[in-house]
Structure formats: structure tokens, C-alpha cells
Image (cartoon, rainbow over the protein chains, first blue to last red):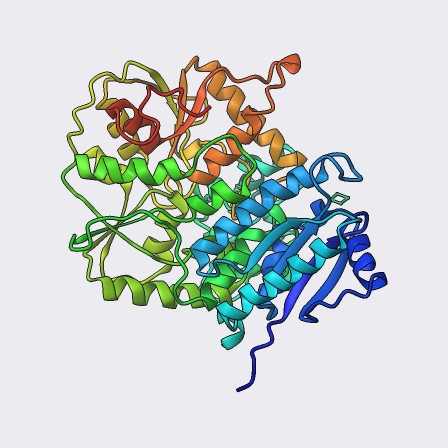
Length: 136
Length: 361
Ligand code: SF4
Ligand code: SF4
Ligand code: FES
């Protein structure tokens, strides 16, 4: 049987999670290749519309990552992100896309956490299956 | 570009519409020129500055249906600025593609012949950055309807499509309309009650529904809610979609007067009511902010303790200005801005803000 390989859009902020991804690469840690990483300068750059757009364009899930609270390069950008993503996750519940959007803080030094985050999210989406927007 | 559903050809260019247009107070914009350009040159001049408030329609001596004109001009066009990064339009688009999407988590009486649709209030809570609870409009409405002996069925519809239509997106509107019409017909209700002025206009005028469509104020005006402690002085902001578009001015006043409240009228009221400044999620900018200031200043001058409206969008825009509290320039507003249903439900001691009116901001 063919295993379902989900397509996942992943947002990484330049200063922490993107560097975290680099660390995974440098450390040669293996993780699933289902994510398409989009680098943004700060997680607060990510508008809710970006996520809706990604889902509309056929992503099965959207993973948003950024610096830990207190570590944001722009002081409190990720505080806004946290609030926004909470709302987006709520909106997903109403729309029937529960579980397809997730926020996680990953710092530049947390290579293994980056790997775990991606692996877990990929498994979660795999279990959920094809996005109803893609099935159309 | 013009088609025959509007009668802009009869415009004789008197300019009355310019004189009354609220947008003209703050920026150089002219409905007369828009009509001229479309009739003579077949170009569309600035049809996106209009707030579709309908003031000009009440004043035009030739009976030009300017709202139809602007709508026609917009269809198929590219809107200039959709606020909140177009998130509500994106959501509506997703709803058209997701069969089992919901707009509310409320539960009602599934056997009722009367259906209540809260509109997108839950999404407003998520994507408006305001210290207020839009969901309370929905819970209050259900509480009030139940109190009036009309326990409703909660309608799980898609967005009504109002904003998408006025943003010129006929295609998306048609999809939403088709889906909603199907859902309403299948539900077997005979009356659809809505608490949003925009939903009301859209379901009443832009859909062809077999069931009756009512704004909640019309139901509550005739109901005995048994509220007698409404000693407040209340000013009423007539939402354009409930007022000039559909002609309902008395029902909200009647419902509020029945509580014993003293209703005061602002300088511009009923047919002449000033606009909250943003319509169809477009034109939230410094010009239209000036219109909000005008409106809120008028409300302040009445000395009312509460400003009541029946449209969640007016509510959002007026509260957005209120939260700025610019007392340095005299633009602080020491009164509450509330939705009709929230005001009544709080008086009833029901709703989730039943603690006497100062529950959440
Ligand atoms: S008020 Fe009516 S007739 Fe006069 S310019 Fe405006 S649309 Fe034309
Ligand atoms: S509908 Fe309102 S904003 Fe638009 S032209 Fe008429 S008066 Fe001006
Ligand atoms: S810079 Fe990483 S979250 Fe703001």
C-alpha cells in the first residue's frame, strides 16, 4: 500500500527556527521531507491569510515556528504570533480543518527539537489524511 | 460596463448626491462624476471610495438607484483595499469549498420552525483586534428569542456573501448563495432570523428565499421580554443595511423603548444617519476614520450612556475608535457601544454578560 505523503508548508523565522533547521542539517539528523520551508524574518510576519492561502493552494498542513517567547529578535513579535495562531487554530475547528495548523517555538540551538516537531506534525497530518481542500 | 439593472442614465447631473455624500466630507469623491464617466466614457471612476451607505439614494431628485449603479460597476472589478488583509474573504472562499464547515458552535432546538443565523461573529472575535466579545451577540440573541417563546434552530450556514458581493466578487457570492439557499430549504424553517444588518439585507434582497427573513429587532419589537430596568439614556446608530437599505428604523427603537430606556436621537438619524465609515470590509483608512469621529462625537453630544446599533460591523468600527481614547483632542467616549441584542440580554440578566453591563469592556 502506498503511504500517504502529506504536503506541509512550514514557516521558519530567520533568527531561531531557520537556524534550528540549519543545525539539523549540519548535525546530519534525518527527518521527514514533507515540509516546504518558507523563511520569514519573524514569525509575526505570518498573516492568518498566508495560512488560509497555503491550505487553499493544496497544503495538507501548515506548521508555524519561531523563537521562544522572550527571544524574538524584534522583542515581542512572537507574542502577536501566539495570539494570532491561537485564533487561526480556533478558526480551523469551525472550518472543519482541525489539527492542520500548529505553532511551535524552536530556538537556533534546538536541532533535535526541530526534528521532533517536524516528525510529529507530519505523523499527525498523515493520520488526518488528505486535506478536504485538496480532495476537491 | 453599465448594464440595465441600474437606471443611472436618468441622472441629470445636479450634484445633490455629492452634497449629501459622507465620503465627500473627507475626501474628493463624487458619485455624480462616477455616473457621468460611466455613462459618457464607459469608464469606472473610483467606484471603490463609495461606502454604499445609501444616503445619496434618499436625496436624488431623479430617483437614481445609485447603490445598484455602484454594485454593477464593481462586479468583476479589482477592489482597492480589503481590510484585515482580506482574511474574511479568504474564509468565505474556504467555506465554499468545505462542505461541513461551521460558523458557530451554538446548539439550538432542531425541531423549531424558526431558524437563527448568527453570521460570522465568531470569526470576528478571532480576527478583529478588539477588547470585546462578538460571540455575545449570538448567545444574547438565542437567550432573547427563547425568552420571547421562540426557541430557534441554529442555522449552520456559510457566510452570507454580503462583503464578497460588494467587493465585486459575483462568482464567490453566487457559490455562497447557492449553498446557503440549499441549506435553508433543506432545514424546513419558515422564518430565518438574523442579528446582523448585512445578513438581513443580503438574505432579504439578494437571495430569493421561500422563507420569511427577519432581523432580530423586528422579532423583539413585538415580543414581551419583561425588561423594566432599562433606565439608561440610549442613542441609536442606524446601520445602513437595516436603515436605508431595507427601511427598518422603528423596530430597534421600539425594542429598546419597551425596556423603559430614554431614547435620544443624534443630529443625523434614521434616513440621515451618518455612516460608521467602513462597509463590506473596504475603506478602513484615515478618511473614513474621520467619519467615525464625526459619528461618535454626535453620540457623545447627546449625553447618552449607551450607543446601540444592530450591525456587528458598525459595532466593531465604532468600538475600534472608542478604544483609542484620544482624550487629548476631546475624542474620548465615555459611553458604551453595544449591539441591540447584547444590550437587551444584559438587562435581562441573561447572556454571558449578565453581570450588569460592564462585563467585558
Ligand atoms: S443626485 Fe441623482 S440626478 Fe443628481 S447628480 Fe446625483 S445621481 Fe444624478
Ligand atoms: S452610497 Fe453613500 S458613500 Fe456612496 S456615493 Fe452615495 S452617499 Fe456617497
Ligand atoms: S524573530 Fe523569531 S519569532 Fe520574531
